[in-house]
Image (cartoon, rainbow, N blue to C red):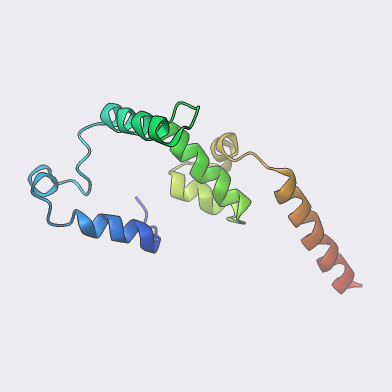
Length: 116
């Protein structure tokens, strides 16, 4: 169990369903009946948006992890958010792109230069 601060957009979505009858009756924060149904909804969204990829909750989780790394979230913090017991599990989700590698090498060079 851990406490993770939520982004403003996420809080806004949760507030929309705060008093929803279905959510209250089922003691849930969102009115999604099941993971299977959520995947079906995501498939519909992909079709409407012209996305030629099978979208699933697993795909969304992977995308979140990749974006978090891309925007500079440390891998150990991301592991905690994803509920992983160690960072090796997290590295499976987070592919290091050339952008991240370039940014980290530039930062390393700046630290090295300031140390001399």
